[in-house]
Length: 116
Image 1: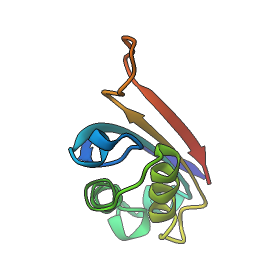
Image 2: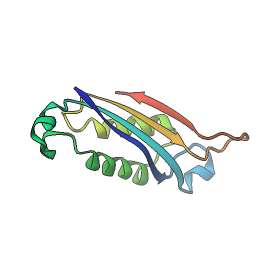
Image 3: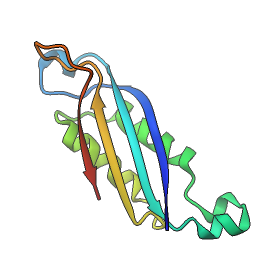
Image 4: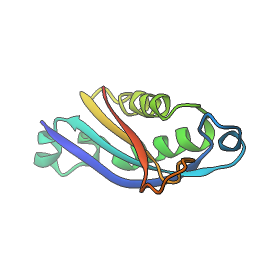
């Protein structure tokens, strides 16, 4: 077994509870960890023997850009569903960070992490 890691993906999307969050795109940071058997690709050096992280990134970007959710918990769960579409992915950890949260304090970001 092994882990494919995608760290620091930034995507604009329309997600949030507040009215202004539902009308304008804001930046989200995404980290993915995909649990899968890396041994076949380690032996063959063939992309077809592993999970294509480029395809996973494209699918994640589509979810963030084209779907709308109030809660980042649901956004993270949805991204997890997309990542698990490849049956070789046996587990996934998804972190979603709202990079400019609408709070009355200075924070770097707020976020959630789910495992599925």
